[in-house]
Amino acid sequence: MSTATVPSEPIGVLSDAWRTCVGTGRFNLALRQDYQDSLRLVQEEIGFEHIRGHGLLTDDVGVHRPYDAAGHRGTQYVFTYVDQVVDAYLALGVKPFLELGFMPTGLASGDQTVFWWRGNVTPPRDHREWAALVQAVLRHLIARYGLDEVRTWPVEVWNEPNLVEFWQGADQEAYFRLYEATALAVKEVDADLQVGGPAISPGADAWWAPFADFVARRELPCDFVSFHAYTSGPAQHVPFGVYQTMRRPQSLLDQFGTPARLLAGTVLDGLPRHVTEFNTSYRPDNPVHDTAYNAAYLAPVLAGGGDLVDSFSYWTFSDTFEEVGIPNAIFHGGFGLLTHRQVKKPTYHLYAFLARMGRDVLARGEDHLVTRDDRGRVTVLAWQPVGGTDDPTEPERHEVRLSIPVGAAGADGSAYAHRSVVNDDAGNAFTAWQQLGRPASPTARQLDALREAAEPVRSHRALAVADGRVDLRLTLARHEVTLVELDAVQDETPAWVDDSRILGRG
Image 1 (cartoon, rainbow, N blue to C red):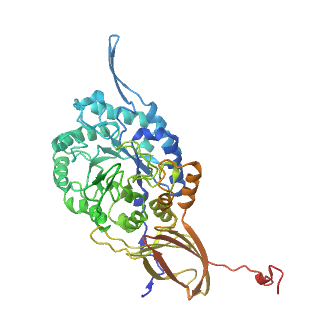
Image 2: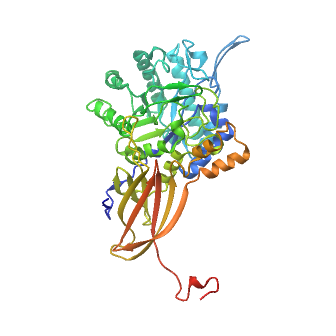
């Protein structure tokens, strides 16, 4: 096969859109130790900027507390859990991306709920009381964390109102009324707070034109637009799980790019675009999330998504997540980059690899991304291209051949190559778990084995540099994602050193 020549000068800059935000299970899960341990690890090795999840205003957080007793009637706003969660986030270096939802029972107009934890998805019975709740939350956060800080926290109005599961009747007019009350309430607190929506699910493009028209007609504030992207088909249910078909990875990038096209020429044209949820499957019990296929599938999305949107938030960082109930096994198809107990999945390593790359992009192809940092270190992220269910393109091996500039132009010498590998076997705790007999609750010894199996297989070697270039030849196994880090060698070996004599021979 031919060798692709990587340019010596950058062709662009690697966007941070891939780690601007990450998803999470419902808000109050952050009170748990396992959750915080997982987030700490993710932040140390990847470093997301914001975190978004449902449930800030649901009853289990306890913000909205109506009372009617002893001749006193009113509403108290309680921030005991909010403070603990936000304090933990900020201590771990991540900011909230505030999704406003779901409806507190004491303010709800009905009793429809979603998820095992029963989030209320009905409109407020009184929009003025809803606006007062929103303002109370924001004013408390500003008083505690400072206005300049809270201005950096986007405020998103609801979640997927186009679906009957998440908004009673998927009533568009009712959502627009909620958006108006919320956006005006936010701006009344501070004009520079960021508010946006409509946080619609895939397949809801018909909402864009009416939403833009409503915002324009009512002269409402809107600082960003938000939406979600998934590529899986209908769920094929089995006990405690599902199987689904998958469209091609390009489908995610197509979804990322669609709103900009549909909003061109509207009042929303040019606003920041945030994908506040994305993944392969939209189900939290689909085993595809645990596989190396998931990582290889998403590699081109992470490499190119920043050209289309301002952020795209992986749903979610951890399997501490309970939408369909308490997970029944350590590997159960959860969305997380990590299982419970911090076992890393292959997709975790895709993110960790990208976090180690440089900012200057030297090349980008269908199976690779090449960057260089400000110290001259060159990094190569390579992956086996995969297809969707109807377009399987996954041979047992995939070859990548690159001519890469390393060190001074025209120089000869050597480069140190450090390679990290994840595929169907290497760096794959899911495969190890299958081989262990799929223990639902692994013992301490089994957990140690899974964590060890989850680490990428690492190797190193010296590569010849000729005329300032390295000829890098990679053979990737099935569903592989690999990172190669290249550093020009400055040889400091003394003239008297003879390694052949280490054992006293010669």
